[in-house]
Image 1 (spheres, rainbow, N blue to C red):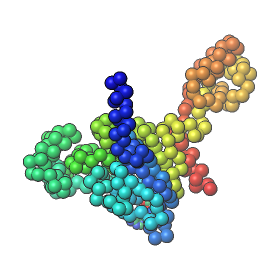
Image 2 (image 1 turned 180 degrees about the horizontal axis):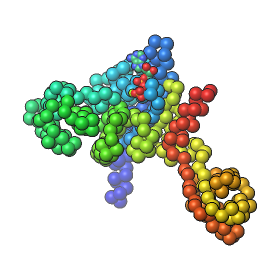
Image 3 (image 1 turned 90 degrees about the horizontal axis):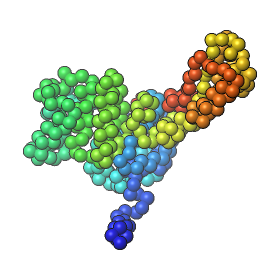
Image 4 (image 1 turned 90 degrees about the vertical axis):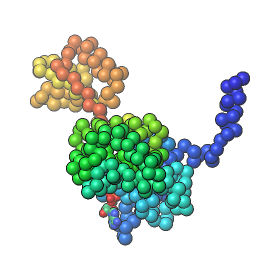
Length: 331
Ligand SMILES: Nc1ncnc2c1ncn2[C@@H]1O[C@H](COP(=O)(O)OP(=O)(O)OP(=O)(O)O)[C@@H](O)[C@H]1O
Ligand SMILES: [Mg+2]
């Protein structure tokens, strides 16, 4: 009985028109030209709240342009469709959009002449926090981003990773529900990059929606719930990392032999395999699934052959990226 009541309550309570509720960011036919240069040729976005979305693309693809439009810094072309951020219409209510978001630009907003702490307090002022609240927020974020020891030093003395952390800490002063991170880890060493990934994951655990751009396929693979590849002004493909990887062929199993006789028997047992007689290697297309691998091994077993080396290659996002961007250019 109790659960019945709860169910009806939550349904009757429905607050928003149903389609808008779950999307933190949505855009249809987003278009932008600079002069006669077409940058965004009508892109659609639908990013659920509490998720990480990665926009991938080569230099000049329009990633920063998309971030600037969605964060109200640049206007889209008039022919664009609706853009809603945190439920607010970007065209009619940019103030409400600004209040809901935080933006960490591609190039640091940190002022090097003042200390990390002063940078934070400046942001607190911009967000009209009281002096007390500003100090408390700054202290909390400096602590969280491991910048307490550096807080009193001029930001110009910070390493790239520290500056990036300070950048994001500054973005969080206003407690945004949606964060845009334009290439948050470009130029960071692997350790700092991993630290940044941890920070981004933590944000999402707290319910924040993250829209990030990156050049690093590995980064999108690590972090993003959904990935879109921007190319020639359009989204060339969109999906989870796994879905994108399935778009490109190229998965294969490679069997290497040292004994030429074993190699020849294997080639007979697996007639569909590609052969490299010189290196005594056979290559079979495969999705790398357990079932396919077992079937290959079973066929070798029943021929009484053992390979000296077996490697499985599954396509990674690099394969996807190059396949997609090559296709588009060839059109
Ligand atoms: N204010 C501007 N005026 C004219 N052209 C611009 C302007 N801003 C960007 N562009 C052009 O729009 C295209 C997309 O630029 P954008 O900065 O969005 O690319 P990006 O994907 O962020 O590239 P990167 O990976 O190098 O940061 C580029 O050709 C750029 O020269
Ligand atoms: Mg950019």
